[in-house]
Image 1: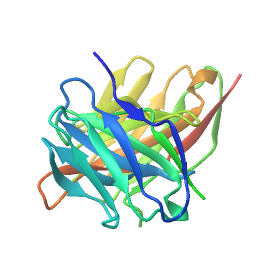
Image 2 (image 1 turned 45 degrees about the vertical axis):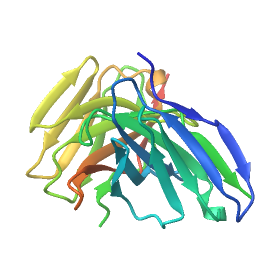
Image 3 (image 1 turned 135 degrees about the horizontal axis):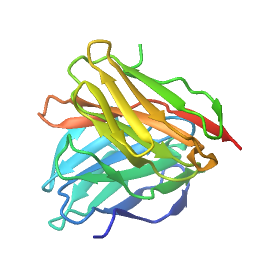
Image 4 (image 1 turned 30 degrees about the vertical axis):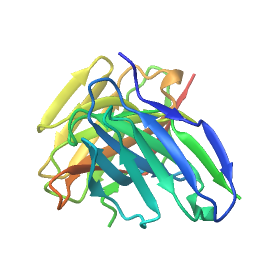
Amino acid sequence: ETGVTQSPTHLIKTRGQQVTLRCSSQSGHNTVSWYQQALGQGPQFIFQYYREEENGRGNFPPRFSGLQFPNYSSELNVNALELDDSALYLCASSLEAADEQFFGPGTRLTVL
Amino acid sequence: QKEVEQNSGPLSVPEGAIASLNCTYSDRGSQSFFWYRQYSGKSPELIMFIYSNGDKEDGRFTAQLNKASQYVSLLIRDSQPSDSATYLCAVTRLLTSGTYKYIFGTGTRLKVLA
């Protein structure tokens, strides 16, 4: 059974650029949630995808968007990057939304 | 009031002692509760989950839930230096879309002294 994977591991961008982060969910999991974790903080919920549809969103602006594909892998897109977007971006998969979530290794994004 | 509150620590305990980590939450409707361990620079790793009032034991770990007091705790028996990490408490919240999201606390940093 393959766990949750994410790519890339690290990324450096400049303010105003756009970025795409990728996630492959654990085998059999059809729910993917994305989180932003700033230094010293707990993960903050960005949004969740279930069977290719966004079915829940946190307090993040529309420049944070996503996709889920038929194989349940997912992308997080961030447009018009700001300095405050620098964080660890985590993807987590689960069978259902309220079930235990398993996290990928994360993508460390630095915006200069 | 934060939705999920944890003491940031650090909580220092000697090797072999019991570490007690606490978490309170504000939403009485929360149904599921999770403890994650996060080593510095790594992603969270699921330790325990609990849905019902009372205790749930798994090896050296015990999760305790008291919904009336809106309180969940994690006990680590026979603490080892390898247990030194940040422990995150997470609770589920029902969204208007009908799905659930996790709300995390800021975590408690545990240091086990050899």
